[in-house]
Amino acid sequence: MVHVDTDVVLLPGLPEVPNVSVLEHRDEAGVVMMGAVVHKTEGVVSLADLHATVGHAVDWRRLTDAVTTLHPGCPVVGCERGLELEAAQDAG
Image (cartoon, rainbow, N blue to C red):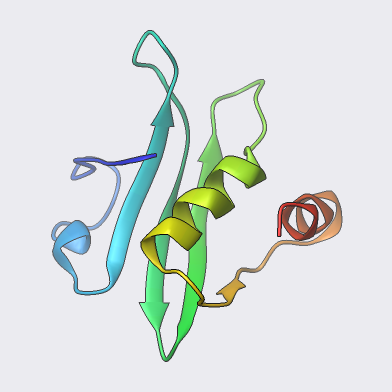
């Protein structure tokens, strides 16, 4: 996961907001495979705007590893349901 320039997709200035990180993962060819917006507040890290390239799923292990590297020891919350919630919980 890397920080990216997302002015075309997100509200202008969002990546500069304190405690907000915009993450993406690219394949070997540089194609964006998945991404998310991470917001740390009140000792909790919130995941939002998760996305993956058509035909691919969010790699929850890679995402949680990136988030816990950025914000070690903080609980991670989101609004997933069903299979996505199970995948998120399985990844920690």
